[in-house]
Length: 276
Image (tube, rainbow, N blue to C red; front, side, top):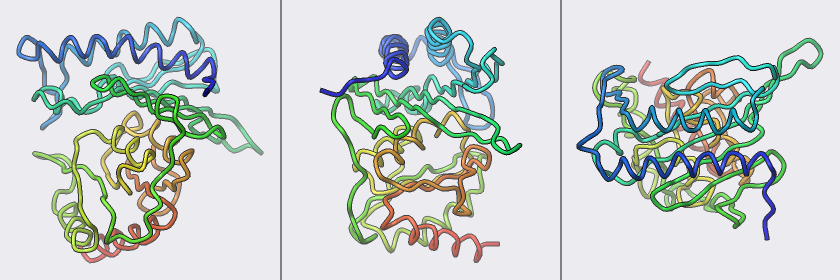
């Protein structure tokens, strides 16, 4: 039986408590108060309540950790090395339309100085799907898991047999023309492209081998912090669109198995070069 560390247990307990509230609100969508943060970008009472629950539960057990939360922003803690990175409801638009595909994402970032240089990495991550009561979780060096089962990225070797996930920007968000160019470059090479509406859950699906890859831009750290570690610990390869490791700052991410990653990156890079 898989033994979860105290840190993962803290994250999973907080996510399950917040998840129960989301399930309740999902059943009463028409009663929710919703406001607009930007074009096509919404926040509901469900997001706010879930974030408050997560903040309370995580702070109670690790009171010195800093926090970066989607709605509440950054809060400095006494522990300068560790920071919670939390999305209380990834897939809000799905949630508000009654589409049962959304999740809670919690990552732990550790930052330290080495030879005078600041280094940061995600050391623990959990993506919780409350609709299916499933936890995708990982710790650095310990592998990735779906509940108590070890998971691995897919072993597909060719794009022609692969399903790749992404996210279509709506209204005024993102560079829509560039995204269409990327889609056009890939769609003739892959078995299918899927747009599920939750980047965090998409990354969990890549880690579990359900999807063979994910590319997306205009993301925030809380959209992908946990998923980055999940894919890596499941044996996958994750970079930004330049092939580096600056995903959290650049907002771009490409995750896949090591056999497909370079080919997808080359196709996306060529599409971007031709569009510019």
